[in-house]
Length: 87
Image (cartoon, rainbow, N blue to C red; front, side):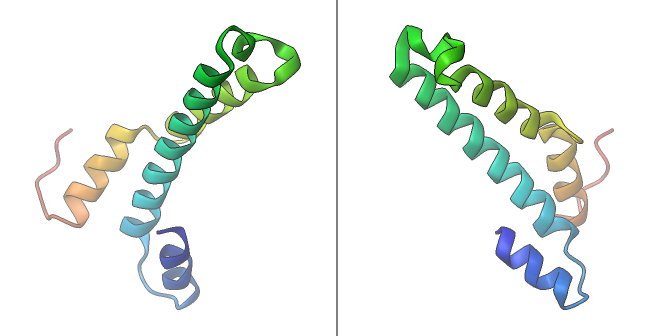
């Protein structure tokens, strides 16, 4: 999805829907991966020495900064599905 959005951008075509979908998917994947790592490490997943806790915090930032998943979904629904604004 990221490569598709980048290709559209490079070609000078509209890519807002694809870029927002890519951010949504990538952020969710990062959160799932770091949560799996923390569960795998068990109690050591909270220890600063293993850096897993830092990765979990940083992955959560990808989900909410600069826009939340709800804002991304609203944008995609409005632009791609031509639904009315929900806010």
